[in-house]
Amino acid sequence: MNKNMGVIDRTIRIAVALVCFGLIAMNVVTGTLAIILGILGVVFILTSLISWCPLYAPFKLSTCKTKQV
Image (spheres, rainbow, N blue to C red):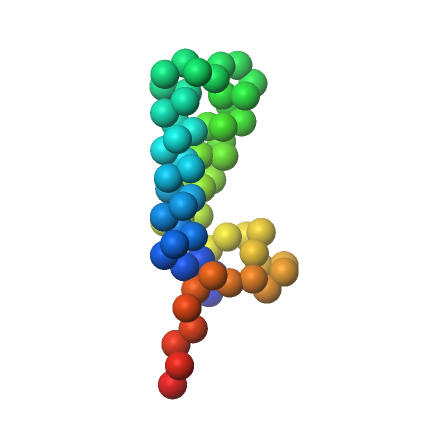
């Protein structure tokens, strides 16, 4: 599994996940929306940690900088 996420992409995903968790913690969102945002936050954190997004793979997208030799 090759990395397909760059640093900026990972940083944005972590920030969005933290916002989702913050909204849940402050009871701004509740119920089904809170569950959906929680799952989205977990997915964003996990994909950021492994630097690989499964949705990028079928489209052969990559936000990684390529090393020039």
